[in-house]
Amino acid sequence: MIDNFRNVWQEFQQNILEHIPKVLLALLTVIVFVFIASTAKKICIRFYKKAFKENYLNIEQTIASLFYALFIAAGILLALHILGLDKPFEKLLAGAGVIGIIAGFALKDIASNMFSGLLVDLQRPYKVGDWVEIDGKYGVVLAINWLTTKIKTVPGQEVFVPNQIIFNATFSNYSTWGKRRVILKSGVSYGDNLEHVRAVALDEVQKIKEYLPEEGIDFYFTDIGGSTYNFILRYWVKFESNDDFCRGMNDIIMRIKKRFEQENISIAYPVTTLDFAVKGGVNLFDKEIKVQK
Image 1 (cartoon, rainbow, N blue to C red):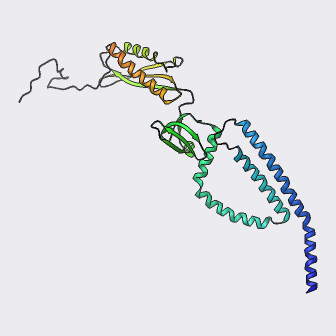
Image 2 (cartoon, one colour; image 1 turned 45 degrees about the horizontal axis):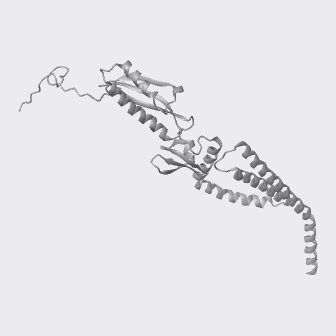
């Protein structure tokens, strides 16, 4: 028994002596990779802040931490390889991979929204304070988060739109150019002078406070309706908020109504012709209508 114990002890000492260099080398490897990871983290933060001076998600720390974790993991894997423990660790990773696949299916929507949030922060299709329409929700952007974009709609509700919708469908940013186009459609009666109608409408648009004269005005008669000559009037107004657009539309409607009344121009309404056995109908004021009892 004593001889066996001596043999075991001698073998243990021999193994310790053989593995001490490997252990020291593994420790040195981990220390070097920790230093590299710290340096990479600092460089990543400095580069991101320089490249993207404004960001809403404050993701530079997250991205830098990911780089840090990757370098640390690489150092640990290399250290395990030096110690000859990489094979058992590979089996452990294989088991963890199966769990990761299951978790990936369960969390795919969350991951998709997070990645979309990152793209929004990098590409900047809109920013806080912009007026946008996303997934049919129109309002001003209050916050851009990892998973959702918060919008305050015109009626006053807070709406949280998942970020992945932004890249799966179309959306509109009304604040990009700082201006928005007002489009008014109406019609005048058959008896009105169309040149006069056009001149009056163009003159009234130029009196609107929000109107941008450098953009010009479009006026076109579009078709002959059942009782009207239909026209479309288009012009640009400054756009800082939705109120600017509403005032631009409100002012032209009020001005055109008042001016048309002054110029004896009729904003036409549907006309119904009554046929009293007279070809082409008859005006009710031309003849006395008799009703038989």
